[in-house]
Every structure is written in structure tokens, then in C-alpha cells.
Image 1 (cartoon, rainbow, N blue to C red):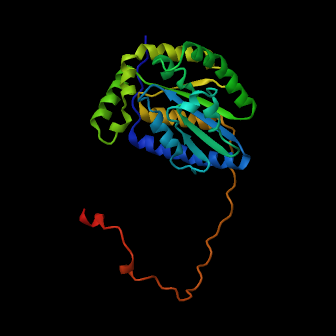
Image 2: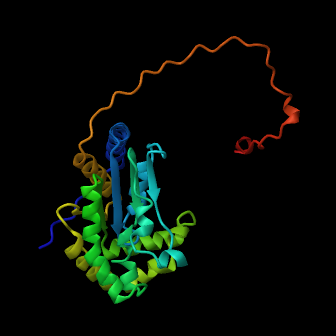
Image 3: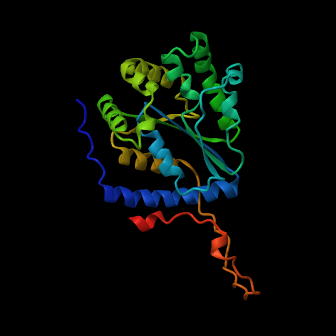
Amino acid sequence: MAGKAAARVPRKSYEKELLRLQTELVRLQEWVRAEGARVVVVFEGRDAAGKGGTIKRVAEHLNPRVARIAALPKPTERERTQWYFQRYVEHLPAAGEIVLFDRSWYNRAGVEHVMGFCTREEYQLFLRQCPIFERMLVEAGVELRKYWFSVSDTEQQERFRKRLEDPLRRWKLSPMDLESITHWEAYSRAKDEMMVHTDISEAPWYVVESDDKRRARLNMIAHLLGSLPYHDVPPPVLELPVRPESTGYERPPRDLQTFVPDHAASL
């Protein structure tokens, strides 16, 4: 018998805990930079499962020179002729960097396989090579974390409906997203098969239940922080310098410059 669903996290509690976790992410960032660590976080899951919103909260207060998001478009004609993992390799972090993959090489195990964008042979080759590829990353010292965001069919349908009706989020809904509704079971089977082959001890999958977006974000960020051996790095001592006395500089007349109209004055 299925357990009772947890109550949704209240907004006030969510915002307070999110701020605390984001402060810890800044501490993690400074450790990554100081220690020259390389961190890769893979975000996977069904369409509308909450990956993008979680990535946004993870990266919100981080330095984009340290933490960057890799969201690759469809491969080019040239990339289609390369070794499958090749275009992902060039986005991997150097020392002192964090890369957040908004979808990743697991496209081949999901949408490409289900929608027939790759051959059966290419799919089987991926399942054999992926664990080897990830073991190579871990053996090279990369901190690899993989999160699968799990959403129910009813919640996904509701999120699609809201995107369809909201002009600010309409861009998030693509024809391929709608295809995922009619291929729900095929995607489920593909995910199960992917887990069998790629849930390895060196780089396990961590499932994030995401019907409650707030709970999913807090749980994922807390787990990521708890899985990495970061520690406080003392910040450099900085002092504001004394502003020097004026040497006679005068700003040009305002009528020589073109200013943005004061739209706010009309509110």
C-alpha cells in the first residue's frame, strides 16, 4: 500500500531553508575554487519534473565564472559523426569549476531511444560505454552527482496545462514535451533500463521525488551539500579604500547624453 504523500512545504519555511542552503552553496563554491575541485552535477528526469527550477536555485547566488550551466542544443551534423560523448567532454569542468548539466549524455537513454532518434545499436553501445565513461571521470578526480527528478503523470499533466496557459512559461512547452504524454510508459521502461546499466557504485543515481517542487529543491540541494567534503575557506581580508579628493573633474552636460526614458514614473 502506497504511503501517504507528504504535505507541501509552506512557502515561509521553504524560503528560509532555501536561503540557508544557498549560503552553504556559496561556501561550497569557495572550497571548489580554493581546492581546485571539479564538480559535475547531472539533472535528469521527465519533462516538467522541476529540473530547470532547481538548477536556477542552485546557481542563483553563485559566481558564473565558477559555476556554469551546460544545456546543450541538438547536435550539429558534424557532432552527429563524433563519438557520442565527445561534445559533452568539452563542457566538463577544469580545476575550480562546477558544471550543472541541464540534461546530459543521458539523452541517448531517454528521448533519443524512445523517439527513434538513434539506432538500436547506438543505444546498446551507450549502455555499455556510459558506466565506463563515468568511472573514468570519477577515477580522474571529478565529483560526479546524478539526480533523477521523478514526477507523477497527473502532476506532469497539470504543469503542462499551466505552461500552456501562462504566457511567461509558454516557451517551456514544446511539441516534444507533449509527445512525452503519449509515450509515458515507453519513457518509464527506458528509465528503468537506464538505471539497470548506469546506477553504478562509483556514480549512483539519486532519485528526487518532485511532485512538490519546493520539497524537491530543498532535498536535492541538501543532499548535494552533504555528499561533498567541503569546508570553510577564509575569505581574503578586504577594506574599502579612502576615496581621493576631487581633482576638478566635471561630468558632461546631461543634454549631451541620451538617457533611457523614465518608464517607472508612469506607474
